Amino acid sequence: MLAPVTLVLGGARSGKSRHAEAMVESQPGPCIYIATAEARDAEMAARIRHHQARRGPRWLTVEEPLDLAPRLEAVAGVGRAVLVECLTLWLTNLMEADRDIEAESARLLAALDRLKGPVVLVANEVGLGVVPDNALARRFLDHAGRLNQALAARAEAVVFMTAGIPVPVKFPKPEATETR
Image (cartoon, rainbow, N blue to C red):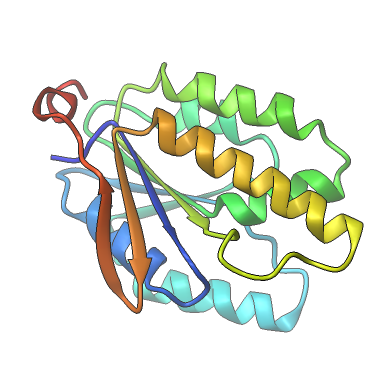
């Protein structure tokens, strides 16, 4: 059984997506994939196609680049595991749309408490590299770091991916996996 909320963190190409997909697929019933990416160029379109091709017929893809909290609440339910891929791109979308990052993050955290089914959230761990040399990139790093910390505190389970290997960081209490 999945924990009600699981956060999967890691660097680029660390195996986050594949591991998160396997976690969701381990559950009975349909698998819902909330995609935050937008195909703004050919390279991103190719990445999206690659991810879609890897998923089987159990998956229902819902695209939501901005309004994640209400969409998550709308699709989550008993017997339906949800994967949100990825929060890092969602933050980028919010910044580009000049949205209030703190308010949107608070909406997401509040929505997690109301979900009726398990959710796996995927995000890049951005705090392991050098501090960027420009203000926009530093602002993004700050937002991503704060969101990851808040989600890790809220999640019952946290997994850090490194070189395709899942490293459990936070373990769910046995009763946490029985609630949804």
